[in-house]
Image: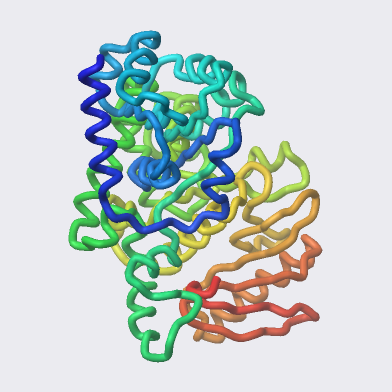
Length: 414
């Protein structure tokens, strides 16, 4: 065990020696570390959770355990591990537990460490950590930091351009970068090596399906699980129901489909957006729209016969809203009016609808503009909301219709 922990210390020190892009985060690291609560950093695999944790703890005396390495799991002995940490990291102030969800009954062990007064930073690639496992054993004992692939702003940071202070001579480069980000996404590993995007994300997608879903849940029919994942990534931004998916893919039961959909959401691979309705029962019955955590997965895996820039932009806006803290259970929905007009995103604050967001890549055609504006205005009337936005590729102006003022803004400013 001591050898394993010493090897992990070398790994930790090597990681700390590398240069990193500082991610934009609303939470101050020192404020987080000064809290006795568990610091939980969650998000999809390979988005930089471990890096974020290391940067938070840089220049601090901290112990490190990486649970994504099998020898540690195979040799696991909690009491022995704690004794070895004292040997390898004398006087440590914090413990970083990386990908801790791979350890059986991890939540009980973490709860015990918390009771012993250990100051813990935890990373994990599973949304379930925040539902059943974290909620039952660790209620009220943790602070959450959720991470996603690079935002557009962080992608510009990487390319040494300030998105919010563009100079006239940077406009062309900015357009190229925005288009690149929309097509290839923001996974940290590939923003510097775009030629690797498809092969890297193809492998990562398969790894999430096999390792984070099939293995974790002991899924026997991996072919069906994989077929569902491929169908969802190819039909991103479209409404789906478990019943239709069961019939379309020839699955044994609707319950299996629902279970697989939940499994694929757990590692932050897919999100399912409900249709807004004041009656919860009707909302649960309506189709949900499917979104994928990064546009790069679409480029790598989707069966796309033609390029759909509109859907790519809609997916990008959805993930940006998730990044801002909107929630597909409580504060973000899509909506269809009584006349079947649709608005892409209904953003709610408490009981009130605070904003409607429509996404349209290109509104240069008068027919397209009329369709999008009419849909937005009709939905605004039914939902009693006058904060209206249309996100486009590069159009910027104000449209007035039926007493409503609609802000049209480019994706880079949104």
